[in-house]
Amino acid sequence: MAYDFLGLTNDVLARMNEVQLTSGTFLTARGFQIQCKNAVNESIKFINQKEYSWPFNHALGSETLVAGTTRYSFPSNAKHVDFETFRLAKDNSLGSSGRTLPLLDYKEYVDKYVEQEDDATITGSLPRFVFRTPDNNYGLYPYPDKAYTVRYDYYTYTTELVAAADAPTIPEQYRQIIVDGATAFAYQYRGESQQYGINWTRFEQGIKEMQSIVLNRNDYLRSTYIVRSSRNAATLL
Image (cartoon, rainbow, N blue to C red; front, side, top):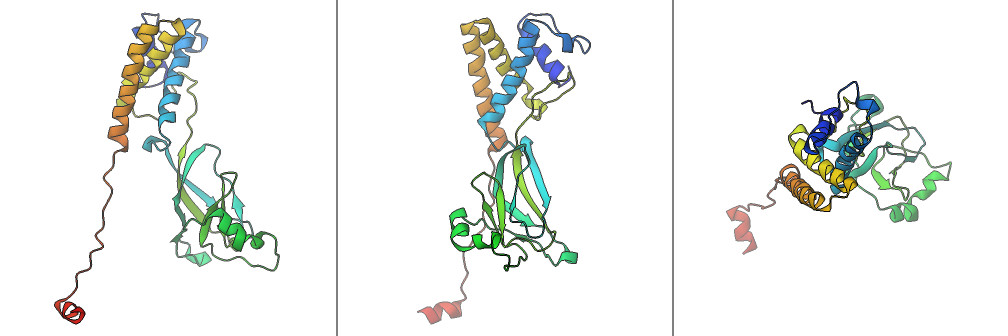
């Protein structure tokens, strides 16, 4: 069965011993079939809410800066932005060799540098810092004097499945977890608390296993040990 909204809904309907849908009847579903469709979206939503940095929701943000403009907005689908990944793209024509942009505390920006937004005599240049604004967007110091390109990594909100062929961002190998959650929601809609509890426990266990597989990463460790020559060691003695 295809890994899409129709296929997932039919997986749930099969568990509930209900009549399954086809691509022709999907949009005209009735009664409990609609509840099973809703249950699939609820299951996907719950999985995505358990972690803000699922790798399958990763996206690369890129924006061409406007000369003289300090503050910028993130895409509307940005759920979490990794400020440690902000960097300027290399562009020889603009004199930008490319660089990372360290995070500047907003209060420090206001205390020391905010006059760049009000004083017309202050000229911009190649940005050196990024700061998080109180409305959860970002700004740059100094403000750009040219149309540089800034890039960053972020994680997206997911949109609900609507059409029969819509597919979730969650990889197909975790299909069973989505179905476990959707089945639990379906039993909850029916008021069958015992079956709901059994499927919900399986659903939560599946999410934990997915977290263990997908999110456990081995960080690269770099040695900072300095090997001293015997000559230097003798000098120290």
